[in-house]
Length: 146
Image (cartoon, rainbow, N blue to C red; front, side, top):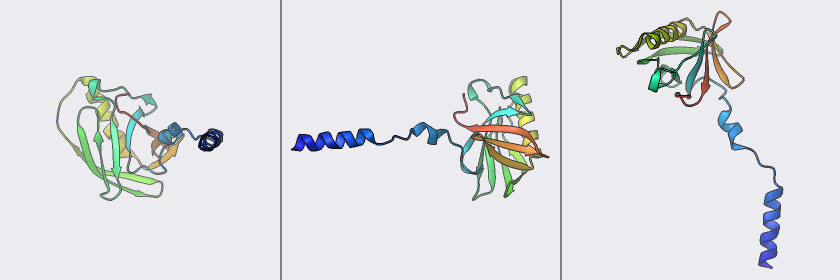
């Protein structure tokens, strides 16, 4: 009797639809806050990892209204405001380490693009930051070194 019950439970369990966990992990959140976003594109060009440090990142804290992350060589932080789809960054500050020319150029382009952002949207599981309707930065959720 016990073995029949176990067999029945096993059959029921095997017949139930299974939702892949990966789909939930790869889905982008509905808003830009509370996630570490990894930069994938600057002004339509693929972002290049900064050596062992990986790609620039962005995190928006909705409670503190603070943006922070890795900008290519240094860490940065500063304020932001968001109203609906509108997004604006305040003055950004950061550490002052020097790095290789290419990484410093990436950092400069990244921080300049952040300063010009006027809107945000999540499109195809990516966070897109826009300036005057044009995508200037594209991020995904994931490991910065990839």
